[in-house]
Length: 334
Ligand SMILES: *[C@@H]1O[C@H](CO)[C@@H](O)[C@H](O)[C@H]1NC(C)=O
Image (cartoon, rainbow, N blue to C red):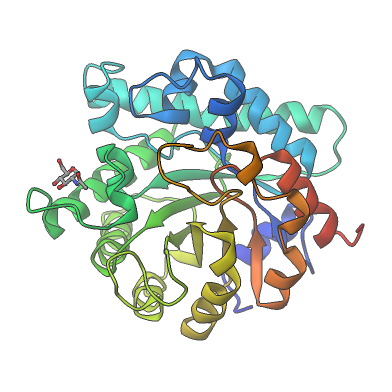
């Protein structure tokens, strides 16, 4: 692993000398266990965080108890645009308050966990999805945002949200509490470039964020959804001093190892691997088809770690059982 800002953070969390365990799919866990909570505002866990923070806190705690070294906040679908469109915030200031509150839920869940005598301090990563994740039409899985969304719009979206996050992290209750930023489900070269450019611009302006990782999505092991080679997107994503790792998330389990190999070849940065806990079978069965769910033991921690993953976790339908299996494997307990 190259020396980056990630290594000392993982060491501080008690994960020195082994792969770190990330959590699984928070939104899907909430939707599976409390179907009424994920109301149709398109914000998934970010909406639940507003309406039912206790449910989100309990879900974070389940991943911590399962052995996660890093939990991700219920903010994947959060944006000023999204909160305002859902009628949850009147304006940018209101959206900022909701974002801060959602971040604080994970911080509080970690504090609960530590108070219960865990003897370790897991990391909290602020999750931010691609712009497609906030458009609510699954375009994050095609990367084709249409003519209405130009490259400059994608960059402006990320910069606005990074700024909002940086302002949140200046609040006393959040200062020093968020360890990482996880930019997830990036489907294209253009969006990877926009993210990196927005991050660099943010830091040039004097604002500060914790180190970020950039995670790509893919449906094939050599290409992102737009058809561009994975290696090209990784090189762009890794091209900022503010990026501490590159990864893949929301990918089918069967291509995870092949993707990892390609990511490794394209960067010396640490690699994050978070496949789905179920194959997406179209909207008919949706995610509800228990028979199609991947058994936790099939989450191949050893194979991913051998393939160079520094952080292993899960995405949609990867629940606490999957994370528990990863945690036992990386800690050498079967
Ligand atoms: C998703 O929404 C964006 C913005 O409204 C639009 O440009 C794009 O074409 C849509 N994509 C799909 C797949 O519907």
